[in-house]
Length: 246
Image (cartoon, rainbow, N blue to C red; front, side, top):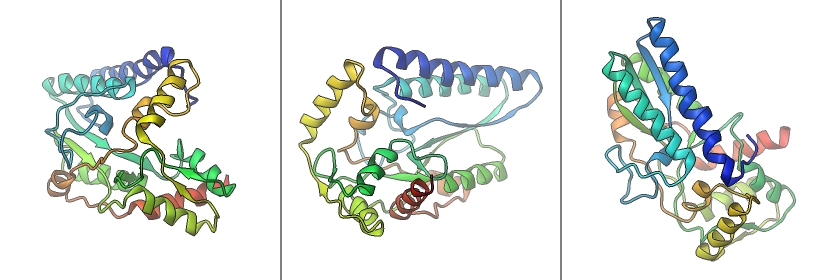
């Protein structure tokens, strides 16, 4: 989707995510369907209060995307009371075919041998999840009868951002270098741009870009017998190759 201005963003996300979810659940319930699987987002948690972020972590989304997805979950909870089985997945940043999104900006810099700035020093860990691991989680949930629970989805052993970016740059045979920046200043500037309609990144993206953000997936592994197969560095390298083929 194109970047929405701050004024339009809330209406957009709530109309697509929340109203859309409500319409779908109402329609399938009225047709007799009692099983549903929902992808929301880790952004329903907001900024991490502790690590790793487990399912019991407070939900304090600070932007319209996370807020709209939290509202989706609340609708799902109501339909559970009506007898539906609804499994809810809260994934980290999904990476894979059709999911380049903000990575296009990064890959353009690498492709042009330009410096790659991090927000902050880049020493934090920023977990992702492969679209293929998301698919396998869906199949595992179906095999388990779609439990009425919420589950985190994420990779294991995420490297720090500097290491991650350097690996992708090397595999692309690029001359780009990773440049750390003062995180607070960069976020302040990005926030100003966003407030005047010159959105470069969404607030929910840049406000946590320099934070440790790791989801606890143990419950997902234990309950669903699911285990992620893709690591962050391989995901990003494959995403770069997909970008090159476009």
